[in-house]
Length: 260
Image (cartoon, rainbow, N blue to C red):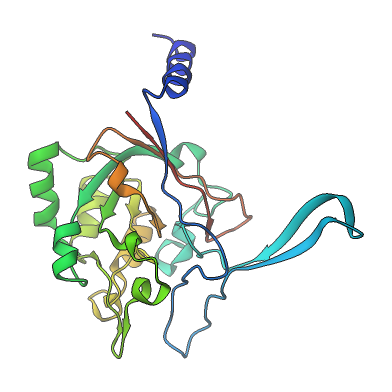
């Protein structure tokens, strides 16, 4: 089958509903939760939307806005340049990453039951290997997505789950990141939480292992995903291109999945 035939078949399948498009993106608005850093560091500002005109004297026939936010706000992409460990790679920013790397098969690791029992639950190598026994080896170039059910927490305070000792949200065990990046050669890791690392990851060795090790391997991150319950364990395709910000460390984006 030629490339043209494949694309024609894909278009027909999407039109007929044989292939469904699933939106994995959270709404972006002023109440969208943002990552909270220790107070000694610069904080990510909340999303702002400002009206320019709305069919009025400022612009009688058009409606538009301007907005302000950090690159890592809402459902967003993390590029390797985002962390010091990835700063020296070529083509490591949102405007220079080869576009084919934004698209890949999805491997969805379902740990909803574990997270319901323990909000600090971590995906380990053993968890991944058990998943592979049921679903097959994670292929090179895949997006590995952690389905935790965390996106069901619609209240911003419950979503952040801040306690006196910091946030308590699920994430990745430090040992599993090099396993995924090197032994499975994934595109990157995606999560439903506000950032790709667990809430208590500041105390891990290394601290913030998904950022340190994933970007250190020239891989990517996706955060604040939703609707992962609409994806199968395997078989979906994720499309996740960030905005083409020159030397951007990341950006909000609209993540879509093609699901049979």
